Amino acid sequence: MVILDRSMNRPRSLHCWKAGLVLSALAVFVLINPNSSFAQTKPSIIPIANAKKLPLGTEVTFEGTVTVASGTFRSSFSDYGFQTQDKTGGMYITIKTDPHLTVGQRVRLTGKLTETALKFQIVETDEKGVQVLSGAARPKPISILTGRIDERMIGKLIKISAIVT
Figure 1: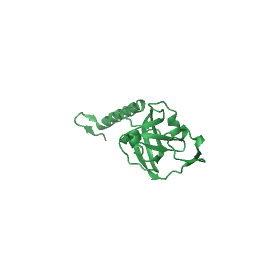
Figure 2: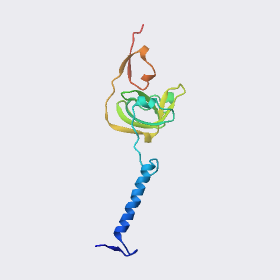
Figure 3: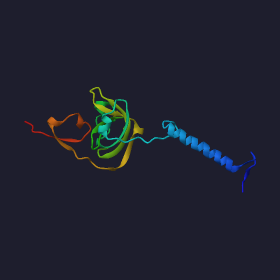
Figure 4: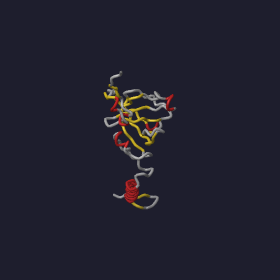
């Protein structure tokens, strides 16, 4: 049995076929144009060490554990920045508003790679780029001799081992 659409004197199944064709064309458009407003891409999460290898200005997304609470260095840096680390490295995050993060919280960060006047690589973000994840674990500091501290230690929680004379 075919039901007629009285407004157009055509079988309804023809309208459904046309609607399906339009939806298929839209799906192909989104696949071909992933940056269109129809497509919502999920950011690729990368290790901090990989983020540090990318050119300045690149938008990055990574997850880590807060090692220095937000706003700790406010008087020095004039922002509410914080430090975070994963298994591969650490990174300072600069942000203008306080996300109220504490040491041990896990976060997902999306922001733009930039650098300080002293050429330290950092990530610049805003409140939309900080997502607090479930679970928290206070990171254990890495024991290191003073002579082995270098740029790779930036953002990591460390315990300095040395003999003071």
